[in-house]
Image (tube, rainbow, N blue to C red):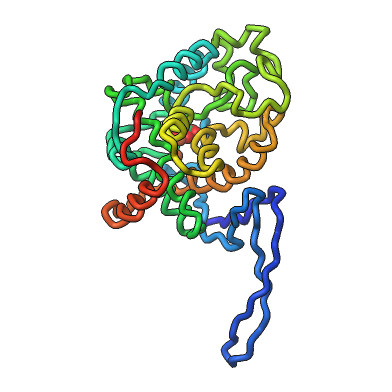
Length: 322
Ligand SMILES: O[C@H]1[C@H](O)[C@@H](O)[C@H](O)[C@@H](O)[C@H]1O
Ligand SMILES: [Fe+2]
Ligand SMILES: [Fe+2]
């Protein structure tokens, strides 16, 4: 059995458009089509065809971090180490070091191919090579939003930061690359997966960092918030520093797609500014495709490659600094 998830219900404007269709008897009937218009000027189609599966490839509901199964102990252990180690000092050091982008020079597509060798230990829903996940996400978005080519490309590249696991990118451990992300420097929200393990984080008992706002102020904007270090923030830095022409919601999606405490649980809203509120709408649309397109269905890479190469050419330089 499958469930169809309807259009998301956040506060977007609905524009009514008149159109006409011919019936079988050739009489013309007026119809009213609803289009959702986001403030950023992008249009959300009224009919989404993507069907959200009820269970993942392991027969469990998606993102069930307690369900017993072969992946559960490994994933829980991943979050234990992640929560102990991601602290303000660590994040500052990583941003400083990796912000230099002085390790590798290569194209976006070359990077996609490198992801073939990457396995993500934090993910209870996926054990396929990462390149499959990139294409599954991008192609699922493309079906429902055929004219938003920037969103297709966002699907393709959103997880490229996982190359941080590879030797030429510093060989970072899994806990510093994958998994959900969250702000450091203020209280860890209760909705974060396996929250209990934060008790051993050096910031947990620090009064400068353990209040609702911690080192931030209400409405300061997520751009001023330090996020736990991983593939999201790294790929955002890569896209920004290499002067990608992708629009603001694309960069926001790349940077915060693992921030489930925000986009799923609604935590940390007090740190957002108006631009974040607007961009979050796109992130919530994107998340459906990122999460639920994970399946055993393979995409024919060679068939779709020319299309994605044309998008890369449109939004990125030929070679990027990583
Ligand atoms: O395990 C997954 C995986 O690492 C994803 O790439 C990340 O974006 C998710 O937030 C995380 O939960
Ligand atoms: Fe990710
Ligand atoms: Fe992903």
